[in-house]
Image (cartoon, rainbow, N blue to C red):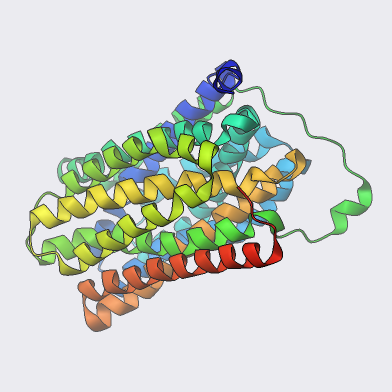
Length: 392
């Protein structure tokens, strides 16, 4: 069995190109994560506005993902992916030229559209290229490109905005997206299969087989909305240094967990990965709510990285596991729609929570969200047991 798995090649030319393109677009994106809240604050915005500016990006991506899922099957992988990258480059490059929060809000909506198109397409392209028997492992490798970007992106963004103007900084981020566009243009994409005309009239918003893992990832990515939007401000308020080390340790832990979690999923299924991973995320949220010192901040980073890095690729692989090839685009769109919805709702709701109750309450609420994901997962397992349709 082990021999036959090894014969199926993952690292083809096109897979290397999509992994490298994913690295550069994620690097440009990750550099903006901790800096957008600082930019909004510089423009005169408060916590509530920060939450809305961060949240509207993901809501915009969410609204357009079902369309990108359909277009992946009708217009092709390359069209959707490259269009998304072009939108991302133009929108991020324009950030520094505006001095009003209203205009920033509008451009964030446009960036969200580009992000929704490009990430839905990128994940679908990767699943096309990975052998089915090694999908968990392959998605883990694919995810590593984003994790490596995450290892350097946030801290690099914080360093650059401390020395450069925001205008120059955002142009650098756009330049990284341009590199991704050039790499993406070299990929040979799977051809679109012709479909009967009547299927085009159907309003296709989601893939049913991807709903369970997508619902679970929603409750987990709510936590990410709190970290990305408010951790820089929370640590500054508590006078705790080393935020750049938080992001670095978090990303290294993500990379570490992805090297083995995908293979565990391929051998034993999501039940061997989900509960241990979510428990680590839960403990990380409790630590952030407490946050007495730098050591606890960095411990939370490691726990969160190991937990989220184990669960996310397993859930994404699960979402396409029983999906036919011509529905993979919609399965990925469904998965990332819930992914975005969690981040967007988290950022917006946490903006209100921090304004009323303080930053610590954000992470207490996030811990509750993680606990709800565990309860929902156990409910899914119970339903499968009762119906006699236990999956791997």
